[in-house]
Image 1 (tube, helix red, strand yellow):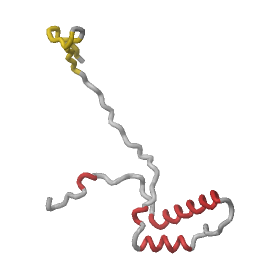
Image 2 (cartoon, rainbow, N blue to C red):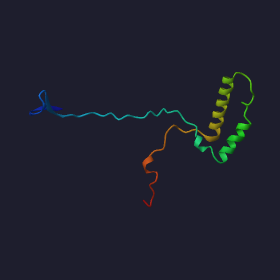
Image 3 (tube, one colour):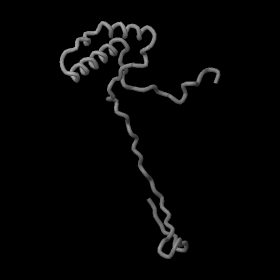
Image 4 (cartoon, one colour):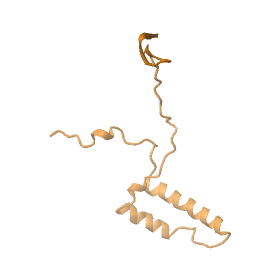
Length: 107
């Protein structure tokens, strides 16, 4: 916006002190709302753990046929499918207000 050099003040023989008024526009970055949903692996405890384990033991991916990579892909796909059914899927958003999770009526 405004810029001037102070003539009497010199740092060295070729350098002068410059004073500026600057206005910097800052753009607010928006997070994209298109985050992929995540499997709620943190729910894998207690009753849901036993249900998941029971479904895994009944799974159809235990038949060893095909190449190792094919078996691995089938098994990973089946595990993810069972986890989505048993544990659920998030919407892709994290918890809001992380700084004040400890705040209660007493505080």
